[in-house]
Image 1: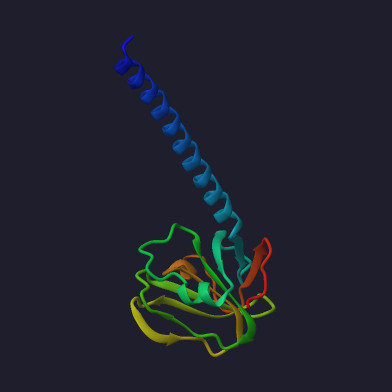
Image 2: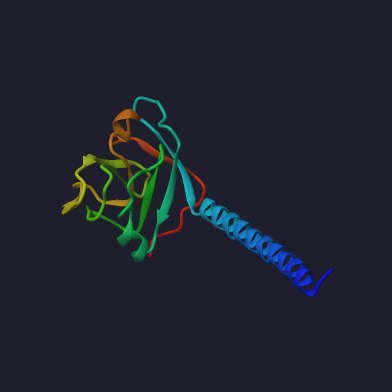
Amino acid sequence: MGTNAKRQKRSLIELFWVLLFIGAATAGVWYFLKWHSQEELLSLTFKNTDGSFSHELKLEVANSDATRRKGLMFRRELEPNTGMLFSFAEEKQQTLWMKNTYIPLDMIFIDSRNKVVGVLENVPILNEQIRKVDAPSKIVIEVAGGWTGQNHVKPGSEAQYVGRLSAGS
């Protein structure tokens, strides 16, 4: 075998190992991110006033100023039965907006006893109008527009959590 042939063979072997390493690293990062994002989800259902239960929701938790500010901005879609839970440190009249939000949303306001105290349905997209209900709340959940009506969630429904929720900051 000539010198050129040996170099080519060595280069191919090196390329194989580099590609194998990159593939393994990519798979590791993907697995870590998938596992980590699963840890950030909270499962929740609602027991309604008529005794029925809603579909189970998988919710991202926004419990810091930064995550609450960003919310669901810039998203173009939500998977079925998913959304975001905004956790606040203080129970009071919470206010939200739809700045840079491209998905019509339902907003569910929940007090410290896990009771729904208000629902806003199909809130219009891409506006900065303040949205609120008259009652104090500690939690606000945003889901795809129409979800609350389809699942009969209304004031008086009870949130039932599966998993832990840390107090907002």
